[in-house]
Image (tube, rainbow, N blue to C red; front, side):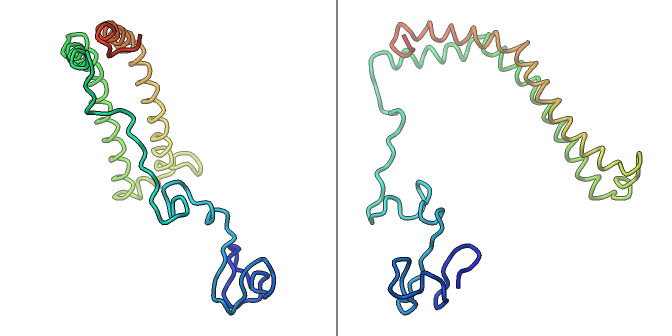
Length: 184
């Protein structure tokens, strides 16, 4: 007999348990055969690996940290120079001035919604219009505020940070081009 997930039960009368067929072992062997494609084709890194007892070869690192070539120190110095520049500090400052209060405000709004929903269910159940109540409006407000914040973040980045960040990127590439650290 087969279960709903297409596994053969031991001792049942399914086609895999009929002796003499190629579908599976007989009930006397006690072996259960799985015909689940997800069971047979395990994801990379799960289960038996490559099917042998030997572990798979490790994946090589994308870059070597111990690499020391000509200009590596100069490229690092160029990046540190850009990071210490007033232009970079201004970009980071603009980012922090927008993100910090926005995250604090959104978390306060979210925690306020959750706390109100758990401590004042009568208030949240108060009808506003027909079957719509305060809790439904506040929940929809959570979704609306999420999309509004995503739009505001993208607008702020486009208007106040992207141009300066692009100029910093070009400056960094120009600084590292001569030392072998940039793409030429």
